[in-house]
Image (cartoon, rainbow, N blue to C red; front, side, top):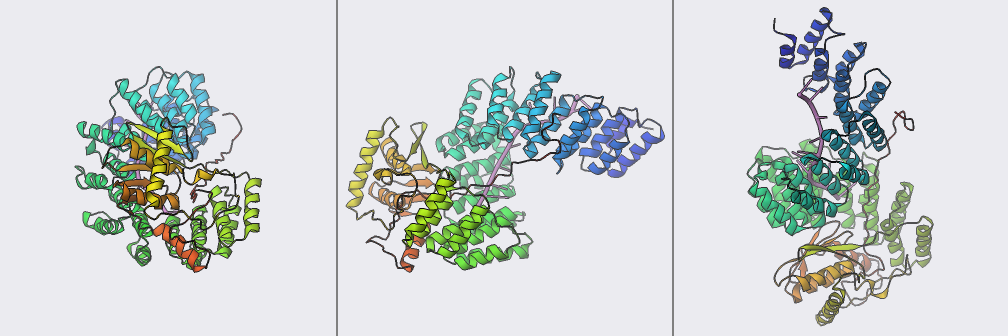
Length: 623
DNA sequence: GTAGGGTTAG
């Protein structure tokens, strides 16, 4: 008979596992043979195995070896119940066999998955106690656990303290920074890594490209793309997908299309979805829908994200009936709509002024409405001046614990539009009492090899005087083209007093002015803004694009605006509604069709409620 | 001997 170990290597079905287990039991080796751990591992992690059954085998063992613990912890760490891995780790700590670096590694992976920072810290202290600190792999796993649980300071500290780092260590921190809202730091680290002689691989460029996406750093992204081509990393589909994402988020949907159409590896569903979303964000709704309809011909079936991307295309172009049809067709194709699809429909209906229908959707849908849904409805109420519904949505948001400035501003906007100043004051009080924080608006522009950040009324840039002179010049020129920034409605002293020039020196305008100064003629100006673009800036930038014959691309938190020859790719869809709403309610509209001025920037915040709280049975106790 | 780093989303 073949040896037990060689049978283990061939073990490829659940029945094999049971036969081998039976063999161990009948020969009396079960309690003593080291091969048992391997069998347990196969049962716990291989596709032919069964984690429940592995647990049963484990429970039969009188004194588990460290490797038995490792197998079961590893199994749970990669299962849907990573919490159990930590529970087993805790059990193990009270038993004679002590954890080894692998045990810590698997348990940390479980911590990363459920963002169990408290437990990760305790395992960290055990790693120190056991003296496993020289193990680069383990240190990297620990670093990753910190980074994934948003404790980037600890991740960075660990990184700095490591005397030896390998490629994965750098990758873990770059990816961690990129995903943890520190894209600038991620890119700096990426550069430092190259200076230290490391050769970025697929994983590295994924992190770095993701950082570029967030920053809108097109030039930087292009450099990385060049590197990708030279190193043939574009044979990796994830790299290609991230390139598509990077290009469209950096404003160049054409280059995203280029990558998509010339991919040398097979396209995955994510490739399609990313491209569709890119087209949607750029307002190319018909191209997006066209691509959506072509997914099937590539032998892939669209999934929930594909539908969401296509719905998003309809949303951004105001294609209401197409969107509704698409939503209905989901049932036929067997893709179950989730809360985001319903959110999309609520937004679509709301933007089209069908606020009551949007509300009915929220009421009837089979999900508990989340913050974003109510925010969509509230946004629509503001646009169409629906006070009753706005109050309802605001109440829901408050009940859900929303403390977002944007939500309060929207409600006060609705009141202000009806000149209900007492209510406006009430909202203002509520904001004060709840210590609602205003999210400061800022804009980025990449120019002269650096990223320049502007806030409203910013005078910190070394060239600020020149920038302000440019803005004044713009003001002079656009007035001769009929621009008049008239006030439709003004929010009376809501929030902090703002300087008179706050509107005129909005961050996006400063960035565009700087772009005009610092980039050469004919080159498109690309600006990234953290909030929604202001309606007045939208008008001004349209005029700039015409007068200065410059294409300007602004990415705001919701979509792209491509200004060319006096018009914008969003078709003014998102702003026209404001005007219709005002006319409908017969409010004062002063001699301008493009007025939307408020003391606030558009803060339709979509801040998500993060469920990072995690309860584990022994919370508070030391492991 | 066994492990670590990763793409799309209202």
